[in-house]
Structure formats: C-alpha cells, structure tokens
Image (cartoon, rainbow, N blue to C red; front, side, top):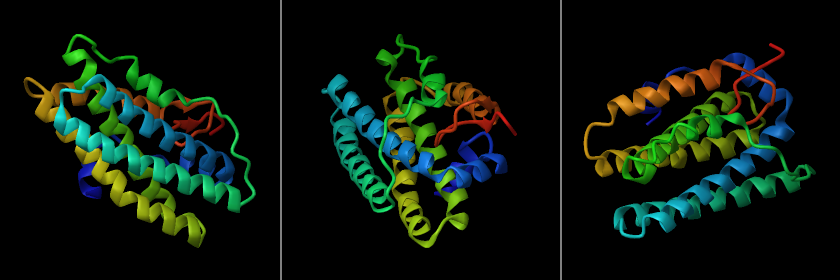
Length: 200
C-alpha cells in the first residue's frame, strides 16, 4: 500500500527532517511512543462516541490493541537503550489538523476519520524514509510497523467513505493542503510528525 500512501499524501517528508531525526533519535523514539499511545486513545474515543456503529467499533477495537502493542514495543526499546521515557509536549501536527474539524457533519466523525488517515499515512511514510538509515534493530522494527500502519490508513479512509453522506474528495483535498503546510513549514519543535527543522 506504499504506492497508495504516496498518492494520498500531498508531499514527501523532506530530507532535512530525516537528517534531523537521525541526529535526535532519543526524542524521535520518545515521541513515537507518545504517538502510539495517542493513536490508541483516538480509537478508544471514537468507540465511546459512536457506540451504534458496529463496523467502526470492530475496526477501532483492533486498531487500539495494535497501537497499544506498538507503544509497549517502543517503551521496551527505550528501556533497552537506556533512554528515559519522559513527558514531551505535543507537536503542532495533530492540533493543526484537528482545529479544522467540522462538528456539524456527523458530529465531526468524517473529518476525524480523514485526519486519522493522514496521521497513519504520514507515519507509514516516515517509517519508510527512516528505515534505510537506522541500525539493524530499529530498521527491522520500523519495517515491521509499515504494514500495520498502512492498513490503519486504509481502514480510516474506508470508514470515512462509508460513513459519509456523499463524496469526501473535497474534504480530503482540504486537509491535504493543511497537512502539506504542516510538513513543509518551519517547526521550532522536533517531533515524529514535525515540519521542517527551523534551523534548516
């Protein structure tokens, strides 16, 4: 599904971010753990808010379990590498997307699902960008994550389509422009989903 993800995303992660990530692996891994925990929380929140939607419940329950497993795996990696799992402030990425949710449309469900698709697609793309440059253990771990993250992307996108009352292409295009600005714009704070390092 990497081709589908490349087609879906509005731009590729810049080389400058990849280089900065390789120079800040401790922060990358800590924030990656945070991302997995937040992804599980997002899935759980959707389950609580849409109890009547059996398809969503089944998909999100599996997704939440997988994201928590990934969180556990990253925390284990941190411990093995002697990296303290500390609190990090959130990146502007998710909030930059979520601030545009239109709560009038199915209680914001469609926008939330589209945003979920972007988050999972970008995560997958960044794993793929990092894999060739990481040590064997991290490279193998991230390569294994690509398949599940790609599936999560597809599930979010399909849920958005089947739950919408009409075509969602315009809404995807709307969020695509925002996502591109967040990825290519300067970012003072390095995170897994941050934009261009401000110093670059």
